[in-house]
Amino acid sequence: MKMNQINNDHSSSSSCNGNHDYTNIIYRVSFTKMHGAGNDFVLFKREDIKRTIVSNKANGHGHTNGNSNGNNNGNGTSNGNGNYSYVPSLDELAYISKSIANRKLGVGCDQVIIVSDSPSSKSDYEMLIFNNDGSQAMMCGNGVRCFSKYITDNRIPSIYNEDGSINSDRVYHDRPSQRVHTLSGIIITYPQKQQHQHEGVEEVEENGKDNHNNNHNNNLNNNTQQQQQLNKILSLTKFIKVNMGTPYILRTNEERSQLLVVDNRSVMNINTKSIHFMKTIYVTPTVSLRCVLVSMGNPHCVIFLKDNQGSIADESQLESMDISYIGRKLESDGLFIDSCNVEFVSVIAQNKLKVRVWERGAGETLACGTGACAVAVASILTGKSVISESISVEMPGGELIIDWNKEDNKVYKTGPATTVYSSEVNII
Image 1 (spheres, one colour):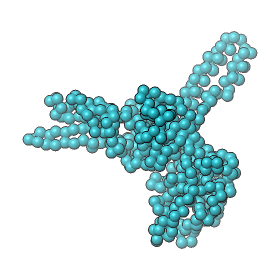
Image 2 (cartoon, rainbow, N blue to C red):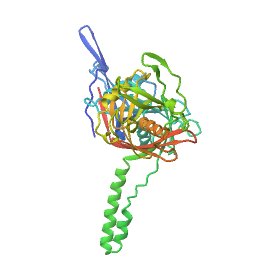
Image 3 (cartoon, rainbow, N blue to C red):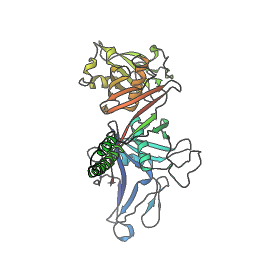
Image 4 (cartoon, rainbow, N blue to C red):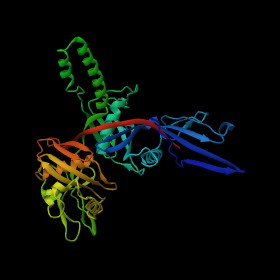
């Protein structure tokens, strides 16, 4: 699938003696569109971006096309023919990402995720994340699953071997886990083995044996074709388990009018006292909400509808209620140091939760990986779930499975990563 060019103003021009000179940069990006439970991303490798420099003076012919890719930190070295070998700088990546993420003028996505070589032997890869406004993000729970699948699908080798030595031959090793360097620290992902055998295949084959040989052979051929098609479809989605780290009590300002940070960002465990993570917040002078405050490296305010009957909609109204008013109110509440994500939760059964998410700076989204983790932690702390069993968190974009391991106090998230399509785009 070929994409049209994206126009931008990443060029320069000058006038001398009445002549107009210009230099235009064209970036060519081969990418894959993916989503994790409804959060969509565009992924590509940093080293695969090709850059062409176009100038009306080059070689005396009015223009020069120079394809480039390589590894010299974005500065570039010319070979005399207009070709440059380089790795794009962070500023260039921000510019490219903003152009690609635009849903009207580009490919369109929530975030752009870029695979880069790890900065140290402590991790296998570096994940660079850019929001659709070009700003850099620290981490994304749904995005890191897509990152992991993209690595395995494309068999991208790490610059380091498992023992920390340099992988000079750049050979891909199919490892059971991947250490991903992010701005939030190292995240470990565990691609899950999948069984692509369709349950009905063996039954069809067995039934065929009772018929004439021709019918049996036809059944086998049809079955093989169906299985190949099914395997192709199933390969588009892979389930990834991610170590999301340790949950913390969310720090807040002491009072809205006094921006004093309360030093309570301590590690949470199943014995954490409720007085530390529970807070009553007034959304109007007369309406208050009981909230559970959790940090998964980013802030979350969890609202269980059952605990706020009379102040908010009933649990049965989760899907139809308007969450925008309370979402905006709490997102920007002065109690929160750097705004906050808000989760609205209905308890379907023990360890089974239904959630809608209001993300800071984005509004309602189909899913939030760190939000699902925060909700699961909050449900255990308030006795709505038990830590000994997995917790199902259903969001509009799909289901995520959360486990809080009390042995290492880490939260693990398992969910789908789906490939939508691959293509390429020129940004000019």
